[in-house]
Amino acid sequence: ALQQGVCSAHSINEETMLASRRFARALSTYTEMQKAKGRPVSPHVTRYAFPIVALTSITQRITGVALSVGLGGIAAVTLAGGDVGAMAAAMGTSAAAPLAKFVVAFPLTYHFLGALRHAVWDVMPETLLENDKAAQSSYAVVAASLAASVGLAAASLPKTQNDGAKKD
Image 1: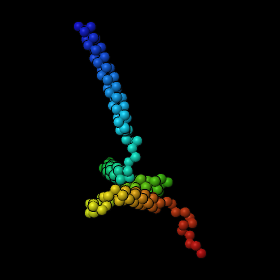
Image 2: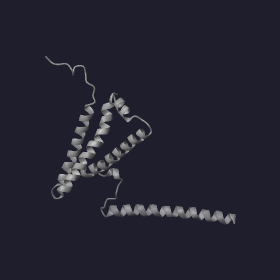
Image 3: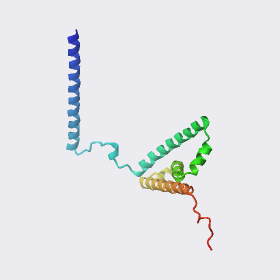
Image 4: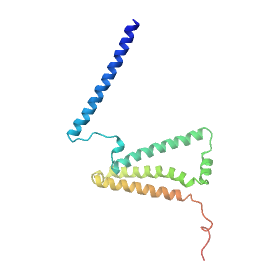
């Protein structure tokens, strides 16, 4: 009985190996068939050049998730008894303040402006949802979000001693 169990396990391994080889042959045959027909075989997603509208759509979702996670983190710290206001004030006086403010400002401004764009699209879809206009609005949302975020982060830069001096 033991010998029969070993034999059946051996045959299962052989069957698995044969199936694996058949699959590999079929895959290479499929690839060769597609190349012979002049059809591209789908590469990994990193090989695609996504249009700006797709990239901004993905970024809209990512910023929404980031904002939700951030709010959840603030709520967790507060529920655990942490003083979020004091933590923010301490961060605001550190050297990392401009970067920290940019990291918070960009998702907020981008997600807000993206939502405004979608609201405008809902009102005038027949004119604004054409490919070229959607791409233009995507570039505008990215540019405005970056500019606003950099501006908000720059507000954290410490003033130099010459900033307060009046010129004669």
